[in-house]
Length: 492
Image (cartoon, rainbow, N blue to C red; front, side):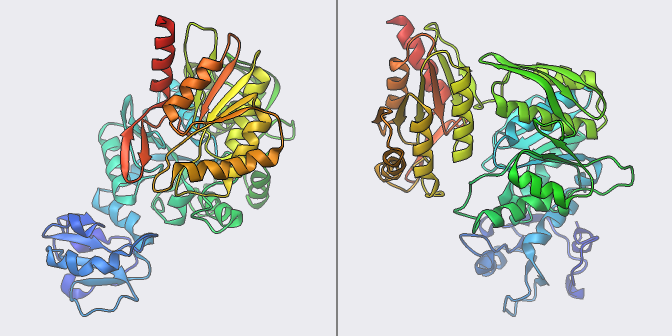
């Protein structure tokens, strides 16, 4: 591709001597550069790609895109205001503009993004549409699943995925949009047809300065990236029961709100929550819909209402909405049930924030016949302030707690646990708790303690099939470990 074609529609001054250069690849990592590539220097959180421009040029980069303040006499430079903001548009041009040929549905918020995305996918499929999904669990092209390292991938990988989706006949993309990706402009090339706001609570404060900064980046999806059309069809779907959702709603001109109150556009006329699922009669602007879902808990009723709002905005018929919701049996690592012959309810859930842990504990508490036993830990090299909060939530909500390791990363697991214990001691309750840093042993102890009718919640890692200790990644699955433990118990 010629450099001039690569910059088509992009505001940038290309030196005349570079205008007709042939570019054979697009790279942001200097180690991956091959002769003929265009290297884009990105200023990241841990390092600055501008430091590696000499290496990229020495490896044969034909041209380099850099920020205006980069000082050098290299002749291959194209100076722009911000390479980070520009990269998604370059990637979209390089991969043949798949963005213009797809309809995007974005979901943002702290909790519920993954489940809402899977619900929307199931509904759209029931409506006969070809759907792809991108998010925490990886990306799905029809029924083929591939893992990812990030909830929202970097622009080059993102556009590669979109190109693959387009070539496979996908024309609707349901995607989780993380606050990091919005802050780093990773998805700025997309015009979203629908955007869903699930909720906002403490998370990622190791990256964002404070909650206001966190919210301001989430807001971008609705104020900057959401399509504006003249058909009066609401494009924003907002949780009106969430404090930040209320704020967002007040700033938008057109939206569908959802919540438990009849003041919302989408709300349950009646509902029933059991340990086996949800039934509800839900009022919507296009009529009442009776839903039956295998998902569990009040938080999933909210996720269902958010998915209904997105489907309505896309003109999906109520019958397809009903079919899609009932057709989703579970979402990996989201209150995923581990079957057993001992009459115990064992669930694995991704809850790794204070609000998510509070929500899942309170939901299981209401639905459980017997005791509630919780196993959890906190990740290393992440927001340390939430650790005592989660410890306090666990002992105030459960009948027994096992504190263990999550992904300690570079931190000492016992140091992380000690910070959790600060909150447990602060709670000043008589709830018994056990410290067992070995996660597999902790899960085994919790399941062994449970009796018929009890519920065991294994929280924090959900779908993850690894554990990060120091700089190594070890195979580890909460679901797999729990299944192996109950299988061994059944044989004993």
